[in-house]
Amino acid sequence: MTEDHRAFADSVARFFAEEFEPNREQWTEDGMIPRSFWEQAGELGVLGATIPEEYGGLGLSRHFDTVSYLEQTKAGDSGWGLSVHNIATHYILAFGTEDQKHRWLPKLATGEHIAAIAMTEPGTGSDLQAVKTTAIKDGNEYVINGSKTFITNGASADILVLVAKTDAKAKSKGVSLLIVETADLDGYSVGRKLKKMGMKRNDTAELAFDDVRVPQTALLGSEEGQGFYQLMKQLPWERLLLGYMALGASQCALKVTLEYVRERKAFGKRVMDFQNTRFKLAEAATKIELLSAFLDTCLDELEEGKLTPEKAAMAKWWGSQTQCEIVDECLQLHGGYGYMSEYLISELYADARVQKIYGGTNEIMKELIARSLDID
Image 1 (tube, rainbow, N blue to C red):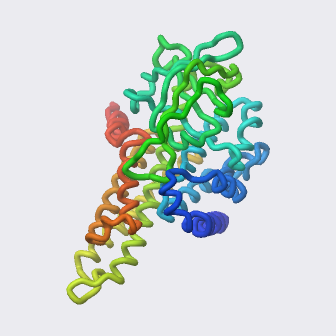
Image 2: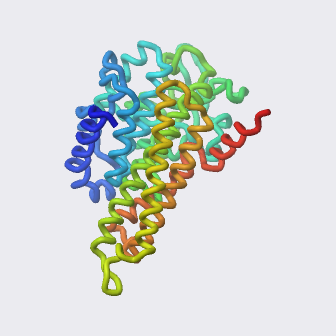
């Protein structure tokens, strides 16, 4: 963390303390973060930190996005779909034409437009080659048919990075990404806002496409069949940021648990004074330090273009596993109060579980790592 990183972190932390924390309970009940919060984040530079200045951003390194994810999760939130918005932004930045970048990135940087990634489908899960949503050329348009589920920011999205088959007969080479603007789009509909175990402030929705027509300029890049390649190129960053979100949530869990055990008494003394408590907290603090050091190494390698898919997979699965272990132990130290919704540790526990599932399940992460070891 340089002085610039710390200054940015302080700014983001104040933003969450002043604008998010007073509204935590209401937004949880609403199941959605209001658009005004997105726009405030845009004004602060959180949404456009890594977008080049020529496209309306601040032109900073991805270290600054990392700072935002850490401050969000250290504040005890993982419901706001910031990471998905920024991942979608990076697809356009990495693979879009100049026209596409100038058209969409400025609005994504300010929060005028909210982005989602329409990838997962009922029955396909992590198997991106098996998507059934199609985008077939008809004149100068694509006609889209299909459905998506578990879409973060789905109900509020103005822009979708849509994974579809432009060649239904091909496997990975038939996958393309399209940028779909949802406003007044005939045939497009948002279905149920899904009820989840955790991340209740996030509007996770089902999407449907019934003969939706978009111009051919919606194709991300200039060539069909590049979608699978584009997805694979971005996955190391996506999986690394999940590791950082796990780190921030773990730091938050340790912080609130320290506060609790210093005040709570049992059998005539502070819970903090029991050896078991001290040992469990010592273990958590050590795991956090080890995870932080590994993630920072990965981030440096990412910036140098050296981060391998298998090392990013390590960051994702180890980070999420560590998070779940730490949050579970911290909840245990809260006793019965840890099971009560009014205590933040309860929310952290419910939010943590999905970390081992999305972004590629931890079982798939281990398979990717194992394949890299099977080399003569």
